[in-house]
Image (tube, rainbow, N blue to C red; front, side, top):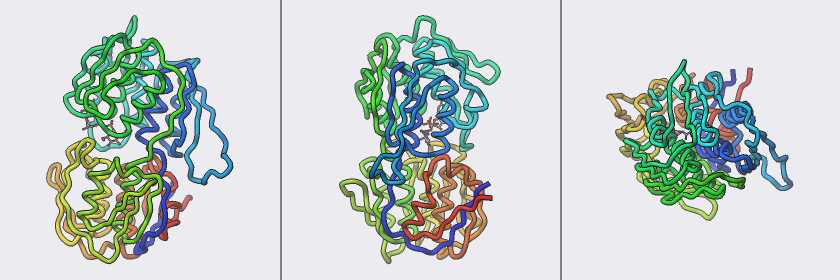
Length: 429
Ligand code: UD1
C-alpha cells in the first residue's frame, strides 16, 4: 500500500494547476445515462473515484472513449471522455461497486427516469456520518416512483414514467438535489424542487443538463423549476474547476507561508473561505485565471468557523482549516453542522502535536508554537489532506499511511506540492 513521506518546514512558492472538480465530474458522468446520444466531458480529473465510476457506467453498458493527448497540452490537463449510453444492458448497480463510493448511488435518478425500472445497491463511501438516503427516496416517491428496499437494494419502478410534482427537501442535500433534478428532466410536466442545494457543482450539472435539452429555471437559487421533456440529447461540457482542491492548496500556503498562484481556481466559488483565510492573516488576490495566495512573515490569527451548505464555509474544507488553526496564535472554535462524525482527523492531528478538544459538533483548537513529524493515518478523503497540510509545517519527517483515501479526490498531489518546493514523495511498496 502506498505511503507519503513529508519533510516539514519548506515554504511553498510557484504555481499549482487546479483540476476539474470531482464533485461535479461524478454527477456529470452519471448524467450521460439520461440520453442515447454522446455526452462529451472535458477536463475530467484523473482520480480513483472517476475511474471507479467509469467501471460502474461500463457495467451498465455505457460506451466510453477517451481522447489522446493533444499538442501543447500541459501534463496535468484533464481528460476528454465521450460517454454514450445508447445500449444499456443492465439497469442494476451492484453492491460490490456502489459500496465503494456513495456518489455512484446517484445513477438511481437517471436510470429510473429513462428506463422506468432499476435496482441500485444502498451506498457506501467515506465513514463521516450515517449519511442516510431518505431524501432521495422521498423525492423519487413524490415523482411517482414505486420504491422498495430488498436485500440491501433500492428497487425502483415507474410504470409509464415519472410525473412532475413539488419536492421540498427538509434539509439541503447535494446528492438528493442532483437525483431529483436529473429525474425531473424526463418526468412528465413540471417539477419544483424547494430547498435545493446551491453548490457550484449543482449549478455545473444543471448547466450541462440545459445543454442536453433540459428545461430548468432558477439555476443557482434554492428553487429549481423543471419542465420535463421527452428526451435529452448529446452535448459537450467542461468540468468546473475544483473549489475544494483550490481551497486546500490555499490553506497549505497559508500554513507554510510563501506565494502561490492557483491557476484555473475559481475564487468566485470560494468567498466564505477567502474571507476566513484573510482574517487568519493570508493575502489573496483574485486574478484573471485563478487566485494568488501569500503569507509572508506574519503569524496566523485564530478564526472561528461553522460549516454550512453553499455559500457558507464548506464541510469539505473543515479538516484542512482545522490543520491550519493548530498553528494559530490563540484558540479557535470550529463547528461542524453537516456531518456528525467528521472529526476523525482530530486524533491524527494530535499525533503531530496539535492541541484540540472535542465536544459534540464543536472542536476547540489551541494553537501551538510547533508541530512535530509523526506517522499518521488517513481516515477519509478530506481528513487525509489535512494531515498533509499539518505535516508540511511540522518539524521533521512525517509518514502518511492509507493514502488511497487521498487518491480518491486529489490528482497528483505530491507533484503539485513538490513543484512549489515541498519535500514530499510517494513510497510504493
Ligand atoms: C456531497 C459531496 C461531499 C460534501 C457534501 C456536503 C459529492 C460527491 N459529495 O455529498 O463531498 O461533503 O455533499 O457538501 O458531491 N442527508 C440525509 N438524508 C439524505 C441525504 C442526506 O439526512 O437522504 C444528510 C446527510 O447525512 C448530511 C447532509 O444531509 O448530514 C448533507 O449531505 P449531502 O449534501 O447529501 O452530502 P452528499 O451529497 O452525500
